[in-house]
Amino acid sequence: MTEVLLESPLDGVALLRINRPEAKNALNAEVRRQLAEHVGALGADREVRAIILTGNDEAFAAGADIRDMAEIGAIELMLRNNHLLWRTIAQCPKPLIAAVNGYAWGGGCELAMHADIIVAGEGASFSQPEVKVGIMPGAGGTQRLVRAVGKARAMLMAMTGQAVTGIEAAAMGLASKVVPDAEVLNTALDIARTISRMPPLAIAQIKEVMLAGQDAPLETALMLERKAFQMLFASRDQKEGMKAFLDKRKPAYEGI
Image (cartoon, rainbow, N blue to C red; front, side, top):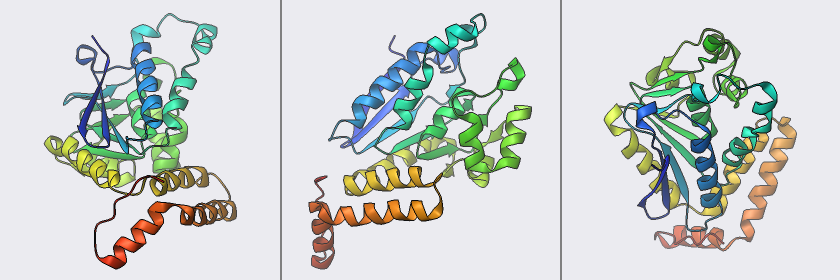
């Protein structure tokens, strides 16, 4: 069985669906490998404008597969180089949208936080429960979580393993949008459709500058923004967008 399914629900939109229902979509080595392989390829595909990551109604991804980790040692874990697979997802130049129903625990919560936009169902459950099995988050959970929700809430989640609902996740800034569970995927598709109609170069620069600038001094981040803003005036899409606005018509963006 293919652990990650690739679908094309809309023009310019790719959907990656984790497909391990028997294990609540736990992230074993093969799932991580396939996710990285797909995201790497889609990130380089000029026809793809946005990527959705999802699971099923029960689970987005209920953490790492404990059976895959219980007996290994530190050196074997290091030699797996899992961080390189996560890095491929983190460095994807295309917008990533996580559509989260059910469990997003451990590695599943970390995977969602690799996305640029998280659409959560009201009944979704976000958690970093690694402490309960003697370890800690190891795929960005301590770092991305504290940047998303602040020190106080991140410490509480990481040190107790407590889960928060989709409603709570949206209130604390972990999720971008919360909707009824049955509307999660359609909402993510609507967002992806909107993004797919925007100029790809501008979208890519927005993502790059926001991610690079968040950990830089303000003056450096503003310089990155200014240079990217200026660079976009060399694109045909900028000319097309402004001309279409003045002509009162819809623009036709080419990504050049």
